[in-house]
Image (tube, rainbow, N blue to C red; front, side):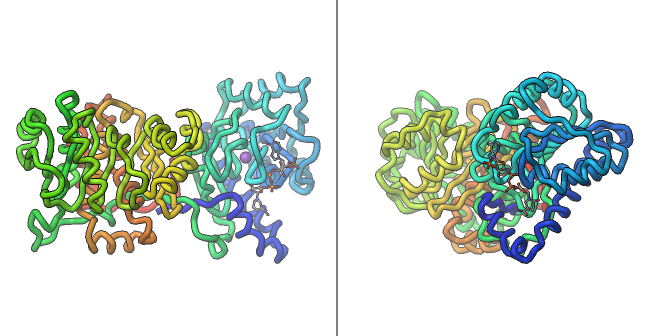
Length: 517
Ligand SMILES: NC(=O)C1=CN([C@@H]2O[C@H](COP(=O)(O)OP(=O)(O)OC[C@H]3O[C@@H](n4cnc5c(N)ncnc54)[C@H](OP(=O)(O)O)[C@@H]3O)[C@@H](O)[C@H]2O)[C@@H](O)CC1
Ligand SMILES: [K+]
């Protein structure tokens, strides 16, 4: 599991080391890590270092200090380095080291912007050292115009120092213009803004350089599950199991108008693996589910007499009054329940953490509007962690906000983010399969064995449902990525790919990694 921290958490972890006079040593560790990663990137893209060109974009603070010390080391390997200063002052010792190593200096101004955009775009490597965790809001002029024009040009490889300048370290909000990085080299620990929101896309691949903060870090601000965590969380069948001990999921999905949603959710739940799916819905849809998935037990029952460990309600349920009643009863049942699509319009005032809402940004907008929180869809897409957290707080439910990076907020305040999906998954029916996967996971992990699995992966118990939701997003993303390897995704085929993903995960547990996005 990856853990990420806000900028202020990193600052407080650094504080005792700075008080002990280790500031310069911290910067040297950061600069060496940046140099080594940038050199490796340059070599892999251009075949070497000697004679290549690099431009460092340098601001006024320690972020520029890291970047200039790293550039001085690159100059020592024969890289022709230039620093473009966006402000009249900078880190004096780093500037001196950079100039001693032969680096050239340019000052950005209105008059020099056009020329410097041209020379920076032509360089083999650009290191973005304008702002780090000391930045607030968007870039100021003249840096803003320079970066806007540079971002529109084709550049060599872009390496961000600590984080892309203009990305909010805490929320991942991108204050445009931001130079998107191919690689972000971040110091001490992952920053929340590199794993969440649009910041995750601006950061590219992320490498963490250990500068010795590990012992001083507080509780993480955000988690990301890795494939190894999903494998550790997954409940494998045991010799003494029968269909009722493995977990039964009740699905009240689909309607005469949208029967396919029931088929997709059922198929995904079955492919995830569980004891049984009980399907409740109109006869015509039950008939279709029976024909496509004969192992599902179909009926027109209501929620109350149905024996299940968990519920999935909402996909394709439309205005069907029986399905609406089932959705309301499932939410009131006290059982773990996935609430998707149409059922999101039926939420009672207050829910519990084992109820997991799975909106996209538009649906979350409607959920929030009913609770007097005004936000446009764009606001939510720009700051998904903030709005998911507000929704979890206001409803008491766990909230999985679907998006390019999926965010899960626990009503305890914890956050997860998963970036396993491929854009190919943005297609009708995809959400129904995610709901089915999540439904199967909550049905199989509802009991004490589920609690033990949560302990095994090191997640605090109040965040059990959020972690399971994150695991569902991860499995859905991996299955989608695998499916997209064969071209555009046909969602009804996703369960087959999910089966293959699970087979790999469960037979050869994947190794853990420090690289993300
Ligand atoms: N602490 C340590 O020892 C270590 C720190 N490390 C490194 O230091 C980085 C943090 O450095 P930092 O604190 O100096 O801030 P930094 O991000 O360089 O910003 C500089 C200044 O920019 C200004 N500014 C703010 N917003 C702005 C805007 N929108 N547009 C333009 N300017 C803006 C603001 O000054 P202002 O002009 O507002 O007075 C601010 O003070 C960290 O990310 C890591 O790389 C590592 O080496 C490990 C050891
Ligand atoms: K930066």
